[in-house]
Image 1 (cartoon, rainbow, N blue to C red):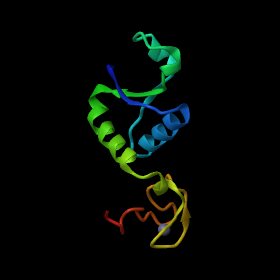
Image 2: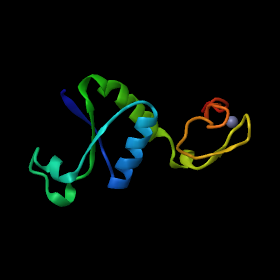
Image 3: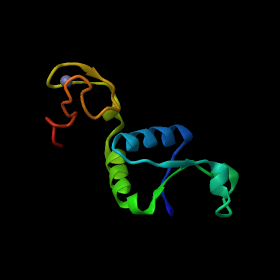
Length: 109
Ligand SMILES: [Zn+2]
């Protein structure tokens, strides 16, 4: 399966968060670390970053999801309260674990 590079992370931490958020949206990605990436070109080691890859056929959808994720301000990932049942929900969840209400259902920006 041919893979395409989807995202170059700011840090390993960022790579993990981004991979998690993509996974929640149904996009499986493969994380490749600095050493693997460096075999593709003349990249100085200190400049090499963690990258996320997806299969070519899933690239367009995953890229769209990534754009959504990255255009969401950091504060959106703070814990939130469900507008329907009032439960406190972890910031990275997009729907209430208790009643399945969608996080953004009531607030269109
Ligand atoms: Zn709820």
